[in-house]
Image (tube, rainbow, N blue to C red; front, side, top):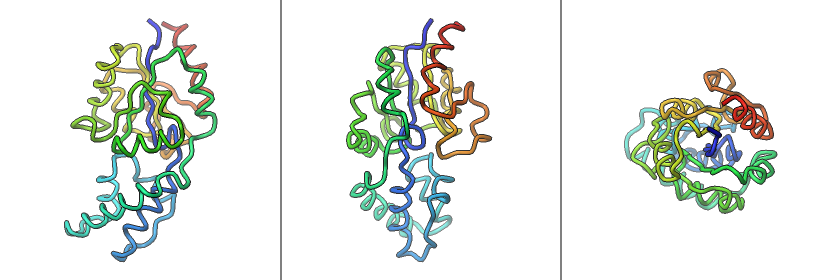
Length: 217
């Protein structure tokens, strides 16, 4: 059986959103006396969704601080979501060459925000389905978002690949029984994604990898 479906993570895989997320975090945090974050600080904690991101940054603060930081973050991020965010090199060209594959995005960013990014960068039309952190009752590393995509697109697990930059993507893929591909150019260090079935350094490496997987089956 050939690979029919390729699922992509969003942040750190298709797009580099690190600067816009950092700017929104700093807008939310500075009024509460937190130290400004650098992009390098932010990418270490991005990946589990906005709520978990803020919890990791602010630590054990009272609920009112957490609520205000969340509200300020969303206020700023929604207005500036595409100030600096761009697709990674060769993403669009690779998607152009994948017309024979079904394609999906599964992000731990809320679905509406994920669509704003993909719509704004004119990438949405490449994908058959877009799933965010609030589309299903659980987010990655749960396999549930992947299982929804498999059911909606009527593709078996054995004919599906997930491509991501974090352990959450790889863990979700393995739990769902699909093939896993990690990219090294994203937000996580190579050691964190070393348990992926395959590792690529550039998005252009994906198509030759998919073709080699076809020959092996």
